[in-house]
Length: 308
Image (cartoon, rainbow, N blue to C red; front, top):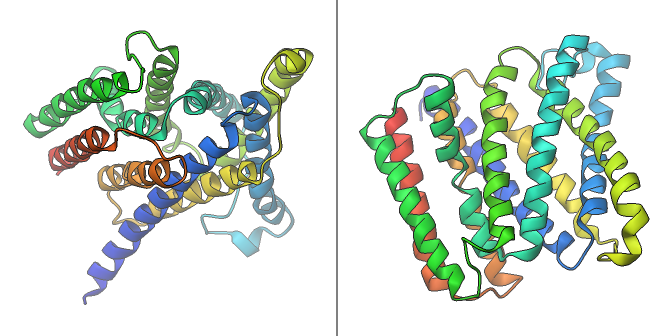
């Protein structure tokens, strides 16, 4: 095997590893919020994510040479950079709030495929914001995704879930849209700042914002809403998400890595979350949803072809 093939395999393998942990993150998230208070779960998630990255920050400050030149090094960022990162924190947190509530009330076999359509939304956003143009393959991918949405809505009706009337479906779609906005914003951020620094600080700002939300909105009304219960899966949510993002950023440090392929591969996390919905939550109407899932994967493939 040539050195080129070895390099190619490494960043591609890392992308699949990231996708696997993203799927595990989705399953843990569902376990954590199922019958549980969403706001404190989200706060603990952001807190744990920040704490998991904190050792890298401390080592980068106390012994810069130890991590210098690696993806683990967290450089200092300017006040202007903090402003940009804070905006990202608000965007991501908005997506998470909508997404966590949706995951709490909907089957994973519904939320997973909806979440997998984010690359299409990002692509459409790039069309208008960055002036990009869709080619034939990309249009085919978008059209297939729209068809899969329609079929998924038919599958949802069998479980009493109306895509037009169910607010949790609306929440999930909003979460996907805002997440796509975050992806477009990432394109700007990653050209200006360290990816690890962005990851640490946006988690930290999210933690601060969630603490305020929990104290002001949830805590005074906690006895009138769904009670909070500690579950170890809450910690797993943070661990899986941190690993998924860290491996993703590390894959992109390879000069040969193709972001178009990495992004599509990461969306294959829906296969893991779909399997989790079947194995851990015994969700129903799997045949129709599986067809929808296959259509989304085909759509992702056409989008990939369109980037070649």
